[in-house]
Image (tube, rainbow, N blue to C red; front, top):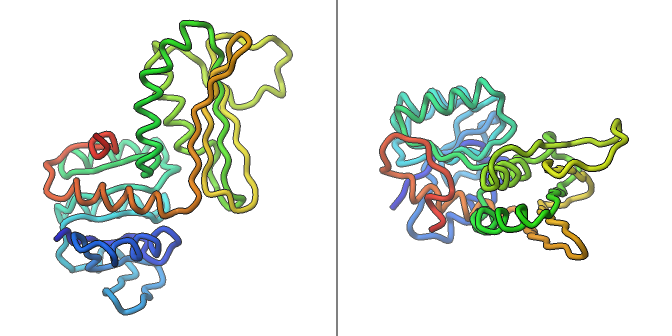
Length: 251
């Protein structure tokens, strides 16, 4: 059985993962970390990760960017692999992730959904053919009105994977309001919509002459991200030091 420390256990995703784990006989949450240090009694909860002295096989992190540096230091010190789901990290924090992965297993993904990661694989195969045929590329992402970062980490991951697949020389464009010119061919437009309670919608649009091909993913609840995180935790437990992503989990 894989023993998990849930960092951010009282957040929406933390609670969702606790529900998923309760129905999976192969995993168990043995401790939680939350700033308020409160829980339902099913596992001990600490208000600071440095106070957590419970043995575990892996950490799942759905907290916030401000907590990531301390989490990585703890992971390295205790030699506990970490599934890092928090987005919106600074360049310095991304370097910290790289440094930590030299000493402990770290799995970082912009989106934990199995479906999104299958979509990434499909796009790597489809994008070169469509780009070579002259299709323009646009990405539209939609999220709830409480989301802080824009564009989403998933939209950026989609853009980066598509760009890599077609040669890596496309420019990302987030705003055309100050431009008055025809659309250059070698750009990927990325648009963000914020409203209501949208969990997460992503469309990758290839617009050609008289035809449009759209690859879409819709998340109808946060459960899809929680399920992916739990599967990632099962995979990561016991892995050697290194930087992993969901492509290692989704075969």
